[in-house]
Length: 263
Image (cartoon, rainbow, N blue to C red; front, top):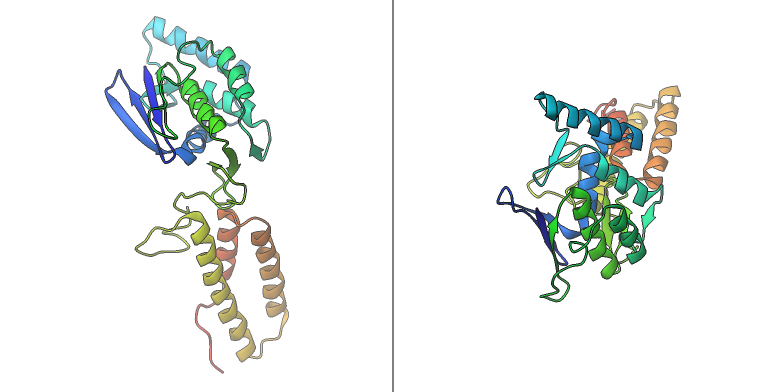
């Protein structure tokens, strides 16, 4: 069985069969589970899931090794949770969990006593016990979000879902995937700070390359091409400061000499 204790900052998930425990950030809990499942189950359908279940049962009966695509909190996951999360997201860019959403998910998963939290011991905290699947864990997380008026949005930088009580927050608190690649340093930078630092770094590179052309009097097709492509890539970053857009611009800038050539 799985138990989950969740408050404003952390969610602790206990696997009572394995005597193991995992701690995740409350705001990132839904998004972290989704991010683990998406690469494996993107494009899965109800029919393909049913086929996977049948094969799994047949392999178990025949003694063949049973393939576990992934284990989350010690439980095998073959795609059901991802289908549930996809149905909840339903192509929306902002999610507003409601108790009606949770009721519909609870009914589909035949949840009874494990549906409601068993305690509200501390302000802003809840505990759920006796959960049987990862989908049940997701439902518990969504219940907490709904109870506390959280919205769920995608980070404009890393693209992962995160929960927030204000839509003014556009970036999650995860470490930027660009850290250690485009930007380095002793202190790991979260997405919003990383976006600011990368923009500053790339602007300095742009200025150096521009002055390199200028000092060599290379007002040429090459310079025009550089300015045109820089503008296109910068506009893409303004529209979406994503990891991919920053990397495209970084790769483009790296095609040019890093040092300014003096006349």
